[in-house]
Image 1: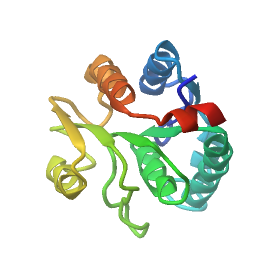
Image 2: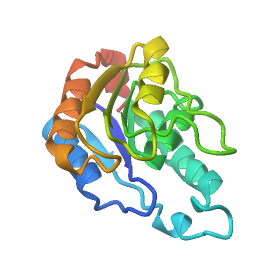
Image 3: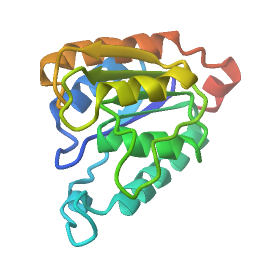
Length: 184
C-alpha cells in the first residue's frame, strides 16, 4: 500500500459521483487505499447557508484526514466544494499532495481557498460558469501547481477521463519516503 486518498464530492453530489468514482478506480489500480465520504446530509442543510453546512463538511473531512494521516501518507482530492475543503484541511493535517477539480478560489464569506505547500494538480474548465478560469490560474501560479485547463464547464462532465489521468499522474510522481510507507 502506498498511502490513502480521501476523495470529496462536490455540492449536491454524492460519493458515487462519476468523477470521484473515476479517481477511486485510479487510486485502487495504483495501490492506494481510498474512501469517498458522503456529505449529502450536510449539503441539504440549507438553513445554515445556500451551500449547506460547510463548517460541518470541514469537520467531517478533518476527522477522517487526521485518522488517515496517522496511518501513513495522505492525498486529498475533491471536486468544487470538495476541492475547497480539501485545500483547507491540508493546512491542518499532514498531506503529501492535493488534486483539485474546479476549485472555488473565493466562496462568499468563507475564507479564500488556501492549501498546504505540497504538490498540487488541478483541472478546471475554461467555460466554468461559477469560477472564472483566470482566478484559478492566478491562485495556482504562486503555488506552482500543475494546471490542466479543458474546454468544459464547472461539472467537467466531458473530461472525467482526463481528470482520472491527471490524478494518476499526480499519484505516480509523488515520492513517498520509505519510512512513511513503513508506518502504513
